Image 1 (tube, one colour):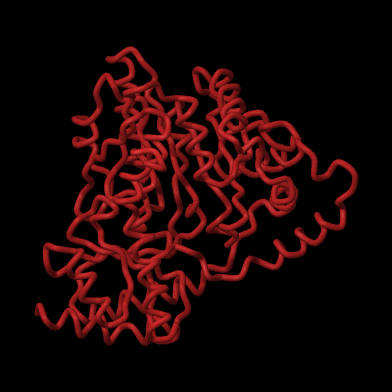
Image 2 (tube, one colour):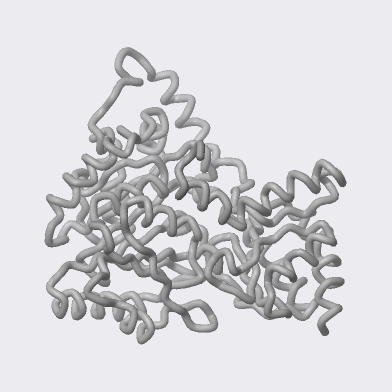
Length: 393
């Protein structure tokens, strides 16, 4: 065999999201892009805010000798300082520049975390539905991802989490606002989760980390806020990126933040600095670091996402779909009217509508709609959603 058996097997089980993306390309070539309604990929369609463009031009103009050279593996000190000052206000806790590491997006950040934390056989728990790539990130470093059920509205099920934690549990990985459901975990549930992890860590004689993947933190609606995990538990790590809130996913820029009171903070940060290098990232992109250092707190205008959410929710409700209105992110996760969500998604394809089966996210019986798209696509697609649902009403 030309390639590793494990990779060959992974290719055969490749992500539903990517499969739908490829199917979209085929249908667009066949029917014309304007006639295919692709809600499969969470690829933000908004233009980055004007501050990003201004900071980018400024950073390019400032380029001189050494500005494209290596810097410390953890990132530029002045960028981390600016970020620490902003995060200290956002999270209500005193963070210093040395509590942070600049990374190649949230995916790079999570791989750095798991490379640092996991011994072979360690388990990472995550509430389901969940972002399917977590399977690969944990497996990359010898761990095993275990899913934990959530309530019907996708909020945390603490008794289920309690039952799932064992002596093998090294970390719990949460994603709030969640992909694929858009759900935000409440402060009360995070406080309860923190108390549970303290209790279980003491019982098993090991530190159990809480890792929060937060790329959608600033995409929230109806006055909602995303609680800080730092106020709920000390052994915490935030992994995130600017991909969604600045609308620059292709630039691969993010960061890690470790709770300043974490018991083994020094070892964690030293280990992560090493892993940022030995995983091949070396350091986060220099130009993007300099840009982000200038625009802390800036985000895209999410008004369009809010309009899209309203359009979809009203249209799907009229058609008879059952769903929880998402308080954040840019996804809807309706229930399929039949148990076989894959079969239902294929029926939507007949109407040239592309969504992703919930089975791909550990949420069978549902499907995911990414509404980071143009408004016209939603308007044109809604009759197709209604036509398919009518078969089952």
